Image (cartoon, rainbow, N blue to C red; front, side, top):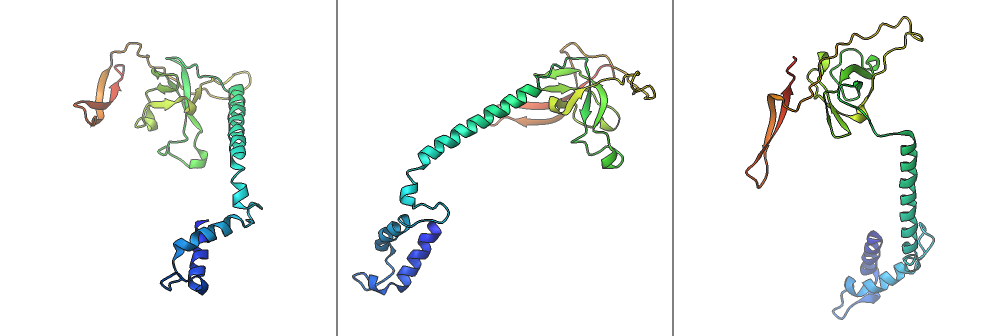
Length: 209
């Protein structure tokens, strides 16, 4: 609308010699604006097939319909999600596999790397959606905390269906059950703005290793 009115005003002020003001100027757009606005609002737009003066009465109904459609879409998506998903029930000591989606330091061709690696043992839970594990080998430098969306339970191979498959060597380290942990290193620190306090991001030491 702004570009259209701007073009209309420019053309009318430039070529509309009959619209001179008292001083003889033809570019007094302030006096021309109401007439141009009326002409614009009463013209049929090709995009809507309606004039803006009539079309502006409809949005209240359209807005309510759009709001209801969005709410229905959210409710349908939630129903479909809840039908095929359940809350994670991981416990300390469980074995699980870690997705390699965000791992860039695994050796070998990217197309041939495993989708999941492990198994690893859950050492601690941070709420219901985050687990902590101690990684080893090529993954030793990775952060040991993962969201449950990037892990899945470990299921050993069934000898009845896969008799020739060699099981993955697994050494399960002891799980720390107490809350007393030794800090291995301070990774980062920051000072809280407006407060005389500091926060530290630390890595805990596994006493077994």
